[in-house]
Amino acid sequence: MQALMPTDPRIWTLGRCEGVAALLQRGHGLKPTLAGGDHAAFVEQLRAGQFRRAKEAQAWIKQRTKRGLALSRVYALLGKAGGVLKVPRKTHAKKDAAKTEAFRQKLPARSRRRDRRSRGPS
Picture 1 (cartoon, one colour):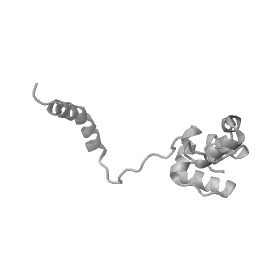
Picture 2 (cartoon, one colour):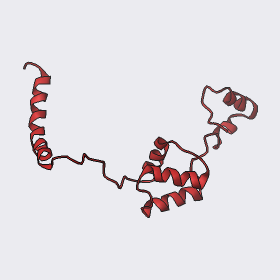
Picture 3 (cartoon, helix red, strand yellow):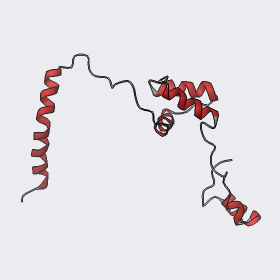
Picture 4 (cartoon, one colour):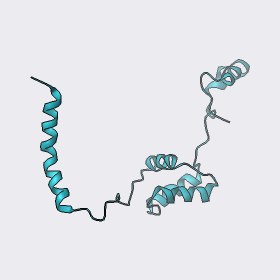
């Protein structure tokens, strides 16, 4: 059963036919993506470090539940379960470490100058 929104005609029918008590009962919402044992197994795999990327978690969920999830939904599940990325972000192979460090040193001074200009005349 799909989630019932306040403007959904089914909610008015449910209220008219079965009363307020039926509206106050739980179970009208969407079913969870990972329920019961699947969720516990997912968290266990996550804690064991089995997923390095969200795509690996996505493949595990598809193999376990036979449901294909969008990566955005997998990221949401990982966030709720306390997962973090274990692979650092990619950097350019020819990146000059000295220039990067020099830029990081100059950045705060450049930001302060920009802040003064954006405030306008005093």
